[in-house]
Amino acid sequence: MNMNLSYSKYLLGMAIITGLATVSCSKSDNNTTAEAAKPTVTAASEPEEKILNIYNWSDYIAPDTIANFEKETGIKVRYDVFDSNEILHAKLIAKNTGYDIVVPGSNWAKLQIDGGLFQKLDKSKLPNWKNLDPGILKQMAELDPGNTYLIDWMWSYNTVGINVDKVKAALGDTPMPDNAWDLVFNPTYTSKLKSCGITFLDTPADVFQAALHYLGKPVYTGTPEDYQAAFDMLMKVRPDIKKFNSGGQIDDLASGNICVAYGWAGDFNLAHKRSIENKAEQNIQALVPKTGGLMFMDTMAIPADAKHPNNAHLWMNYIMQPKVTAAITNTVTYANPNKAATEFVDEEIKNNKSIFLSDEDIAKLVPPGVEDAKTKRNMTRLYTKFKSGV
Ligand code: N2P
Image (cartoon, rainbow, N blue to C red; front, side, top):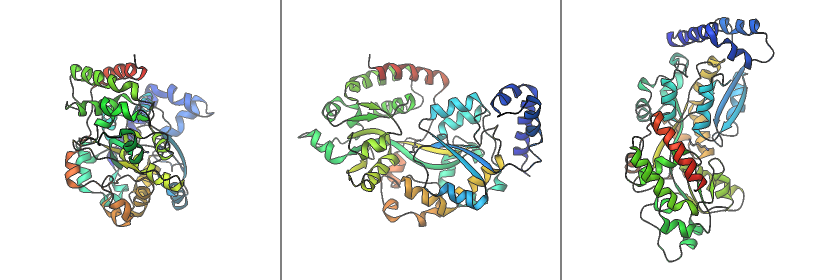
């Protein structure tokens, strides 16, 4: 039996006994306070109810992933989705999320690990761990030493996505820039592309990280002056931005509503695929900037107060089966951390150099990092001003 997990269950039990009972019970269905405390204290020795509550990003799973797990285990899955790390983080901090599996970006997960918000993994329950790519594990260990809390779900990078035909038409005689980031941060280009629609991710961190990168500043450890410079630069393109949305970019691109997006490479490839499925084929491409994109890794973790940690481990182990992971990659066009899955990934996706990047392009990616709390507050303040445009 893994000591870490039983210790965290002990801590969880103690926390409930010593003061968090009110918060915990206020969320429970129709139990009285005394009844609600009982099952938590005895949870370690009792079998878990056959339920698993998952909170993941939208458009990030294959159509049969959940159904196959339910069939295999008899566990009923409740699945909710979100579109930003900020939303997930706020829920985790407030505690009692009700979720057994959450999928934060690894850089946000670092803050959550430091805040004691996750349980340690019990690797004895994860025999399929052997399928994971050692290179990805090493990268993950930068933020989660010893790979103690997190398992990568999928990974990709923030970049610029375009509808090639619409962009060429809007630029007219102006050739495509050498640096893809110019398409969203340089008014020479944005003023022309405004006519076919530019959209940005809707979070302070995503926007400022890319802006700092474009300016050649440190992406996660900039000074207040750097953030001010990024803000000044962003304000110059603000009049040209039509929308701020994150999860909605897939459909906006697939339907031809917009022509340029600052967002997630995986979603741009998915938009292309969806436009074909919808018989409205748009030539959508995820660009791989010469200066590099901003790498992110979205990771599975078990909240400290999860009620079904054993089921959560069963889920993680199920996901790490090569065919299960490959089916997700084949559906959502994101790269995965599972080496053994590669042979089951569709050729077209495997050979798409904006999904599985070349070694040279991987080397250029800015690895995930973390801002301190003061910087995050500053980014939020500046972002609010930027978005409002005044
Ligand atoms: C899935 C989007 C997740 C990428 N559609 C951002 N972490």
